[in-house]
Length: 296
Length: 254
Image 1 (cartoon, chains in turn cyan, orange):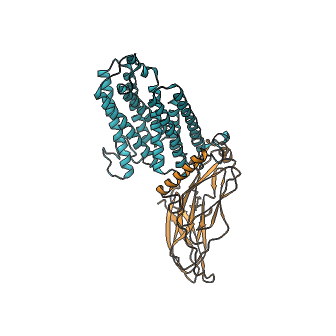
Image 2: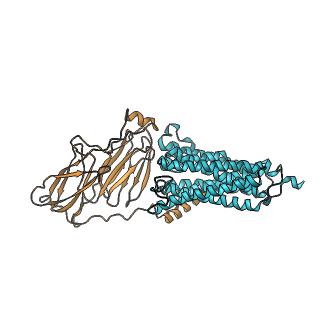
Image 3: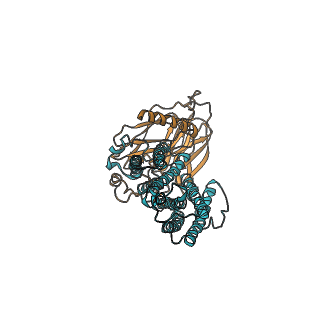
């Protein structure tokens, strides 16, 4: 999961530094095989693009290892299938990454690449969670709260939609279509509209929706399940991550897309998604296979 | 397994190529067929390009991301995007006949190539002109990696990798386009501009801002001076039996 988060951040750095086409060929790098490209050539944009490819290869290998491990040690078929799904996702992700280079960053492929990255991250997080000891043998009976489940599911879906909107904004060059914050050209609503302004403003509205939903969810957890550490801890992470994410979003605009701020915004988006997904899965724990403690 | 994967990738690539509408070459401009220019009646159009006002300061270039570039450029490298002499003369303006040429004239593309080199991590020259279907050689004289990424609007976009010591790559443009932007994604400060015309009446100004469009047939033309930072300026020119008075094209940043 951590390697995937690093990979997402590295991908964010590629986009933020406009380095996506600094290596024009794929799967080779200036004609060299992946690991034979000289370190001395890791300069300028190549550092980010080739570095992203190297990290992606390591993540791909880790995913193969994960599938093998699950095949050997995991008794639940659906968890083994999750591993295979993650492997399929990371292979497809690699192909999308290659194709977007070969076809000079078409928006559709680049946005798909960004969207699938988060799905792969979600898959690895899910596998990590459902193979953990506390998932299989919960210290207490899992929470059974239908309203919380519905809200968390909505939050996770809205966060993912917001990430897709952000990816669309990044790859269509709409990141500074509204150059001020928190207002839009000095107004609450943009005084004029085009596609870029609409995408940008939709991302701001999405941030508002995520913030409101996250606040409701955290309030719900604190009020009704304040003694459940497995919910309270990720809820706090979620709340902090959303606050940091909105601040970073503001600074992306105010710093005219500083590459480090931009990348942190991408990575924190993954953390928000991860925290929301973790909460959602734990809220749905009873819908999965029965905890081991109850089987005894 | 690898062969199957490669075949799948090729099929996927082809599908996406169709779906994305590229990167197929746009239809080539038909080979010219028509009357030649009568040298006896042709006249040169000469002039200078100047800038009025305070030229923008040359921005410092941050080359530390590639030690080879930093070493080659020396201390405090600055952008050469806007080079204006003390008397206002503008270097690297692209001057060309924009409109007015009789389409009956034929201008076969020269066989000799135009070279766009990369030296000290800058494009050399920064601005150049080339004819439709004339070969463009892209070379790398630096001891570091470059990619050459062309961003045309009507020609085909391309992106070539040029490793150190690699032989020059060849490219031809199939349609007129003023200007085509080139950039290096490895080194974000590198930019070049290529004016692609269907005729030979273009020039790039030197340090004195002067230009000559040689051998222009009689007629009335729109001549444009284009500069990447300082803007454009057009003028109407009539070529008759007498010499044409030198043009003074003054840019003002618009």
